[in-house]
Image (cartoon, helix red, strand yellow):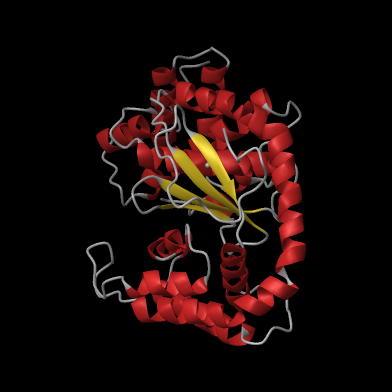
Length: 344
């Protein structure tokens, strides 16, 4: 996933079973933030084709698949960054089939204030939707039943272990971060595979975030951590006007002269998302949960910043530091490594 690093900017699934398509008029003002976990054959097909276009090795004898992969590659080249698929993939929400996606894309303006200068992607996006439409029937008949079964098994894991504690988890997340619960529904699509970074959150139409999470790279409770991690991106998008921990880190960095273009401006709040999501799973869901950052050596492979963030935030969670002291201590040690840790 670049260990989820490119995610920029999910009470849960309906109790009568997983959704394959979203309600057309979902309630957008629940009492508290909750996940809306979904599976859908079109979303699965798009994620699979995009994964193959990005270098996946899986093959299948489906008529039109090669053309769909070629169309995904063409759009990928045009967009350049995985983050830029946020211009297209949120439109998958509520689409019954690729034809509906193609119609939505056809309504997009050729130029838009949301597009980087001189970037025009409507034709390539429509071409991909058309190619998906050509392969959709074969995919749905030949491959979707088995994939659906595998995804439903992961949903049952979620329903058995995370869903009963989901309200408590979101209460803990928002409380730890000093965030007022925005009371949003977070659509989260589970897919078998997803191109790098393996899970991602985009801004969705109408506000908030929409998340896509691959189950393959996330066994056991790693799936729960990833789901909560992505939900933090969605919460961050929905609470930009609040003075919560992520915003405080950004302001502290700005006070030290860093701009939004600085990598640390993006990465330091993201490190905190890793630690917070992992600890909520460990403390509220699975006592034997191992941080994704430990399982993948993320904390070791990235800059020392992630380990500094983890050290200070754990002291806050354990009651050894106040939140503000933990946040300011992180920034002090990150920007002046020789500084003495005030928590010691």
